[in-house]
Length: 156
Picture 1 (cartoon, rainbow, N blue to C red):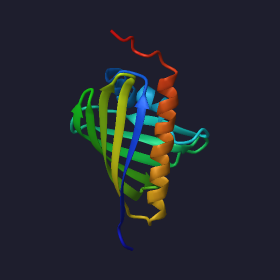
Picture 2: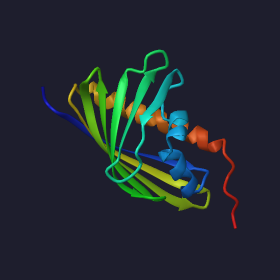
Picture 3: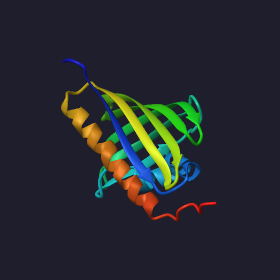
Picture 4: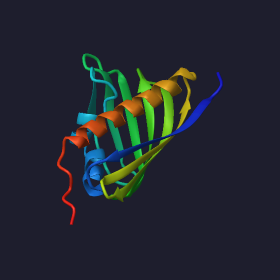
């Protein structure tokens, strides 16, 4: 089987300050609220070690049986402007894909411009690349809804 790869950039304008967004994107309690890609899915953090070299592990999937395991390793945590990490997606101990992810948070007049760059390699066929993009897009759509419910940071 050949190795299938793809890179994509996702951008969102969010109505909160970078410091607040950083917390929402890295705190496990917040991640569980916005991270699942679809309404009938859940994301449950099993382990969180937010430090350079630290590893996280969470489960994601249908609420009745979250079968996907995501293992994360943090490489750069420059709060509140940048995070770089890898994610490996597994199902039943079979590795589906691995990705390199970069978060970029830039302050704006309205809050934060969020950029997410993902380079993914699929070990399970090209369809996994489309599903991975859909998962990230759905999660960021949820993040957008989640942050829009919060108060905007008062402007000086």
